[in-house]
Length: 272
Image (cartoon, rainbow, N blue to C red; front, side):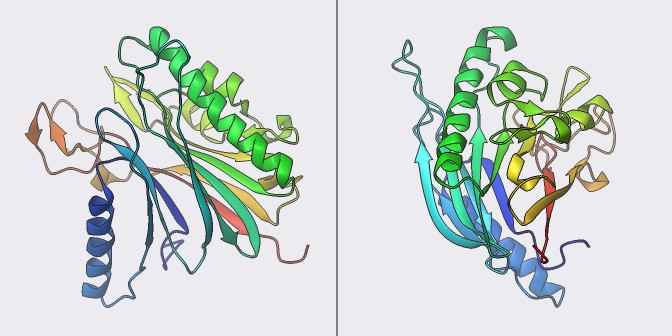
């Protein structure tokens, strides 16, 4: 209800190819037309990553609110692991409300092999995201920057809290730094992914200093949500209340995802 004409920008992960996004856009518009509503006509940004499983990150944007300018893709390399392959990081830059914003879409390396053993890979991914953000900030110090994606770590883990420097409080954020509104959500017991009965919040969206009240962009962060709607939850059985998966133990269950989506809202200050 708060965005009747659709979202401005959607970052996606675990995408097999561009065709999947084309099918998704068509399904959304077909549904809207069937309800007598105007289609969103979302535009697609996609890039084939070197990931060994063949999955990519991507983006959908709404031209009503986001005017595409450019995209760049950065490959994560690990010096002592020359055969390592993961998803590229996609940085999409556009205009929103007359201001420029860059959005870095991520899917950081998994916890395969153990959380602690695999942590250096996510720390390296965080360092790459921070480098991209720092480069943008050095060139355009007034610009809003957003880092989003399935980070496979929680807000308090080293990759997010130390390497990216995502702060729990807006007041802690300095120029060039980031605020992570999902840290407090996790403190309140709200997660986007569950493992062995405990909630994690891997699906995060961080905003830079310029998108906070003290920053220089007219775009301002106003709210963050985990979309744990009932229709996205398993309704019965042992995993009642968990995300309603598409597959479970190799069996098609007809759900949506094993992660809940997350979102943030930005407002535009028009008197500055």
